Image (cartoon, rainbow, N blue to C red; front, side, top):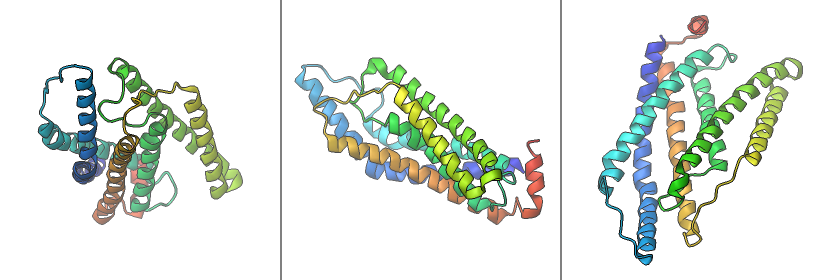
Length: 248
């Protein structure tokens, strides 16, 4: 059963990757081109020669982008299906579609929104090459902390719901999650390496496009995977005990 869920998760991820690629080509790549143009003009003003292209811009924006987002979608779709298989039957009586949608929303908040609040995506020409290792490490550290905070908050919800009810328990868990994330983000170093002359509108459009790609990715995975599972009847209500025992 888990294998069949994994296949459906990867298929949903591939479909999400294709949709994300279309959005990135139409909305994201024009912002990247403008950022590269800004960088080239800045280098020319300094009298610096342009860096040679190891991979042509056309390949980067075409086959390279397609390969990247589809691989990303397939990988996260597969991981998503494994989390779904573990959670199904353990979080109440949610249907496959409802659970898939809620898991996708949780993943979007945890993996995308939280880390991007502190360390948002930057286009080419923004950021010091010498600090890229540190910036990457901080970004992934923020993701790890966000995941840990989400897991802890869900445990808090389970205990609070027994005493306060499901609704109040959810509110308590949400407050705990926000408090943890706020405290961590205030304590972590702030990085601002945006050149003073870089167009603010271009930076805003690039970051909106980056978030938009993730919205399309996780919305598609959450809705399509749930629909595929529900239509396949792999997890009928009577088989929830089997889903629960699959990881015991």
